[in-house]
Length: 111
Image (cartoon, rainbow, N blue to C red; front, top):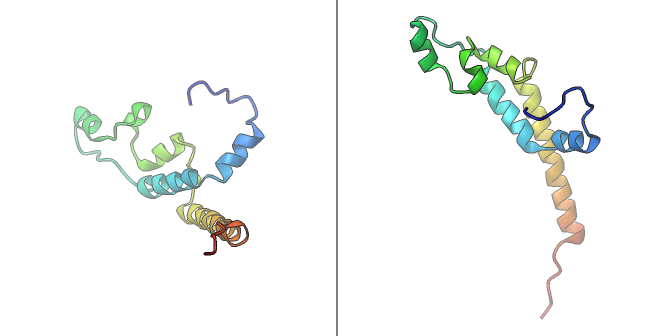
């Protein structure tokens, strides 16, 4: 991304936020499922190929979905593993929500 120095080690807090973000895992699963194994049409002329490719800025000249995943840093991503991580994270959030409501939930006034 623009403005990010890749030579610096990431902030630990940001690493934890990314690790526990369901949005991150959901987007990775969606992108991996969509682009893994996808091939773009090669039987058109040069300009026809450019029109058919997804509008993704610098990624508009890729030949297949695996190149898109490599460019996004998801070349080794596995859909099933990502979904397992997302399921575990969701289960953890549900358990913490239940515990929070069970022991610190709203106190209703008795009439």
